[in-house]
View 1 (cartoon, rainbow, N blue to C red):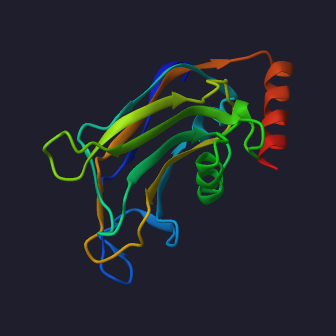
View 2 (view 1 turned 120 degrees about the horizontal axis):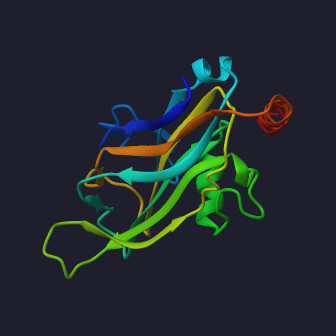
Length: 213
């Protein structure tokens, strides 16, 4: 089973509307903080077959595909609006709301002040969108900042945890006119599965176990 592989995680589009009491149309997504308007979609990549063969995955290339546009209609009394998007693939599970909280405070995953360890982040991308009223498309959100925060470290984990975390920012409270649309996405990780020396592999397993605790 050694050799090059391309791992992928698919996330559905988010097309949600606030009906005055709750968000509807969140198919596949979970509202993780209604007060702060945050959504998450999570999935995983099963690597147990490779771990049974004592193979280590070495990351060589990563990418994100999300063809489409980002649209956000905030409450009518809002004076600003924006979308924060975090794409993460990690070898340990995480708390999406805690990660979004820290990111909003300028503490990225794996940075000082974050509970996540940098080496567990195989893929990570932060993006910030905000309204551009000069573009004549209703509620269009333009990308203003994009930054990677992944380590690309090798892993012997038997599962990868894949997240898309979307946070909405506005100065008003949600009303029945509020909606958000973001495109479906695919997270890609290219690399190779390789057998390491037994002692090296055992040390890697030990480190993986410690990080998961």
